[in-house]
Image 1 (cartoon, rainbow, N blue to C red):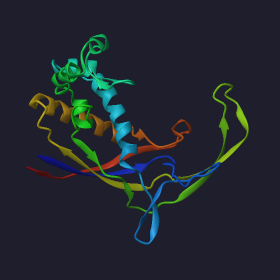
Image 2 (image 1 turned 30 degrees about the vertical axis):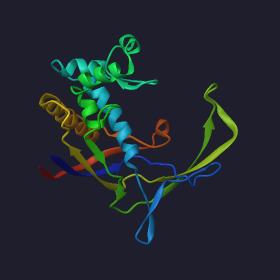
Image 3 (image 1 turned 45 degrees about the horizontal axis):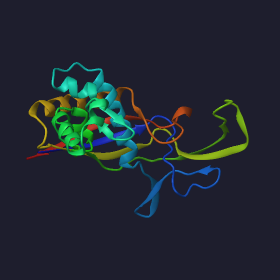
Image 4 (image 1 turned 90 degrees about the vertical axis):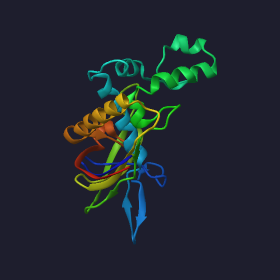
Length: 231
């Protein structure tokens, strides 16, 4: 089964997804050709990463019954091994095939991995890139770099930012594919977690792109429209 959604989002603050064409002290917004003009684009990866991080936070603060609870409590991202769900001491003791077998048994109960994937299973959620469906403007901001150690302005570190001005509306599409590896209990938990993600995105927003610490990149969800379910 496929669930297809149309999602419309608005940047509540300046938005900077940096372009490879940025050079020197000039940071440009990522654009693609659409018709006869260049328009700003939000790649799916810029959205999916922050959504996954929020999914992990939300899931760990929700009430679950076992075995869902155990899978979520043990869900973590390890720099050496990626996403794992078993005790690290036990993980290091196991052989490679035993590690994968142990992960297979636990991850099928993890709604975070159901939606976003893990090293042993593909995630159910796919996002398209987001393109503008309203008028948009670029604002140019000039700032200085801050030395991380002294927290003071760096000399000769003036830079210019070309960002999408607030209140531009973008549209993207989301597809949630039912995953055959998961239990019915996990699928229901993933649906519950998806609802919580949508509520957070609508009420609080997420931050994406560059200069988030300076207040850039707050994105809120304005419209979520379920298009259809395909069996």
